[in-house]
Amino acid sequence: MSSARTIVRVELGERGYDVRIGRGVLAELGSGLRALTKAARVALVADERVWGLYGERVFSSLLSAGFRVSPVTVPAGEGSKSWDRAGDVLERLATAGISRDDVVVALGGGVTGDLAGFCAAVYMRGIPFVQAPTTLLAQVDSSIGGKTGVDLAAGKNLAGAFWQPLAVFADTSVLQTLSDEEWSSGLAEVAKCALLAGGESYTWLKDNAERLRAREPDCAPGAVSRAAAFKAGVVAADEREFGTRECLNYGHTFGHALERAAGYGSISHGAAVVEGMRFAAAVAEDVLGVDPGVRAAQEALFEGLGLVRPPLRADPAEISRAMRRDKKVRGGALRFVLLKAPGVWEVATVDEAVVEKRSAEWSDRAGRG
Image (cartoon, rainbow, N blue to C red; front, side):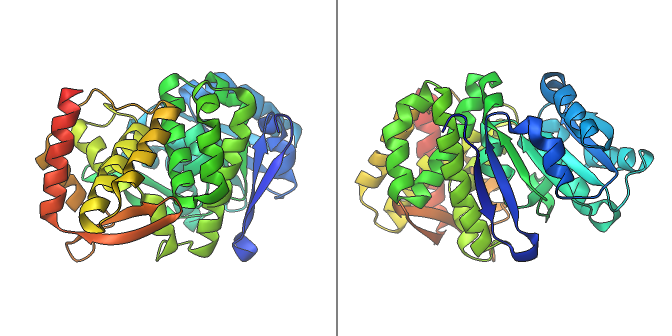
């Protein structure tokens, strides 16, 4: 599997697309994109760090395929996923003469993909874009499914649009440059997908957890392919998140609130989602009477992957307030994705008293380390 190409299809009729996974895929981006479009120009959006690592390689690939390329770089970090930065990128697209028939390429992690995708969705009322994710988190999660957006002061991803890419090019060889924190952040989403999928995906991840923790290169394509295939199936069944796709929010209600309460940048998105899944597993016992063994099995998987609790404390009252501002709130009621067993989940309304109790419990445990 180390040198093979895996293609996962996101089945959305005429808007369907391929997720190309494997080592060296970035070098094929120019020829792959040329096969999909007759566009003359590409706006290549990347953060400054990723540009230094891969920008010239992708730039050359696009030039060789006959595209005129306009680089658009932004500062690295969550701060670039903002309304102001989106406005700046849109102005730069216009100044570069990008037309409705041209293409935006998002090269980087989830911040870049969300930002560039959002700009593509609203520029001239929508132009094509391609995802070239360079982090494990983006390869298994944010690059697939068409969710784009920016953060507002009130919370993450509160301004956005569904805008599917033309294709996703996921080069697993670039994952070797990730920091340990970035790698663990991606493993959180790999774990989430396996827990929701159950079956072979869950078993495979349990069996390969230590290899992934050790970052064995030959193991990465298998993790990316399985997580991508699960997400592609969910998106194909429920593109706009009216039902099944809600499962992908497992761990995110608490996780997003924790990111806000702790201060963006204090905890990685993946680490926050892991804490969110831990929180949801406890809530599931209160609300659905789920056997504690499910929580123990989930924790064993996290431990195998090296997903330890972060040394972080946050005000439980602020976490609760942030959760009430979550997009998934309906009629003022908090709703959580709860795991009943690997592969079996349910969206449930949770009483605020339960949320406050478990928030205080989490904060106390986190404070003790």
